[in-house]
Length: 267
Image 1: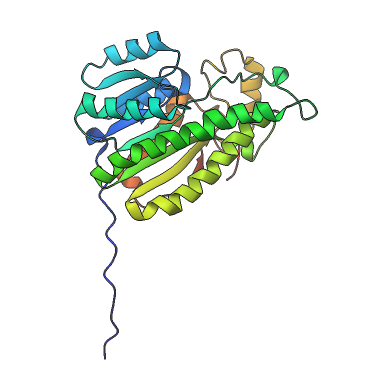
Image 2: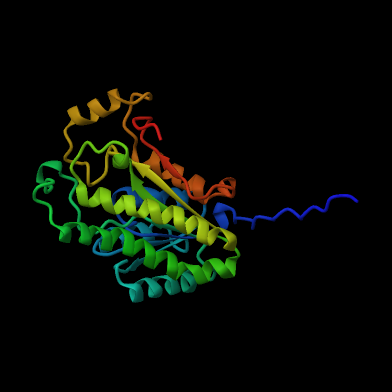
């Protein structure tokens, strides 16, 4: 008797980038702005989430009428995030297909000003967990009904290479991002059977964002010298990696953490 074979599981077709509705949290400035612009370049419709940067968000949306909309929401507040998802459906007439968890609440990238190990309070860690982990959790859960309607979904979380290369005492930030990496992996397993891919893209110091604008050239030069490519990653280069994870070409990839830092950290 011939052995029975089970039919191959058919992965849900991911929509082309030009057919996608994308939500980028913290999308008005810095890296978030580059991420938004990368999706707009590929023809996607983008909801630009912001908390306080109203002018920058509105200007970016106004430059792409019909393709982008700016919506204020604090990702720590589930009701505001639910309203944000509803606004995306209203604006574009289609379910959200990709979310990028980029928002970072109340953090200064200044190593000299950060609390050291002997001084940092759990409250500091709690504040970052609230913005990074609770924020991502709210966004992912609020997007699930849209993913269900679409038959697939992409979640892309923004991490850091400080997991592997903790050269700066960003204890609270790094711990929160490490927790987000764990959430990326466990959610990938839990949501995979529903056609939802969950991945992380991690970088280091970018040249240049609002957060790194005050960084001395000597620091950038030292980082560049430590990379095989001999350069510091730009926000636009980093954003292109995010585009890959949202694209149909990444349909078989989930639960991964891609480090995009010119090869400084070997993951």
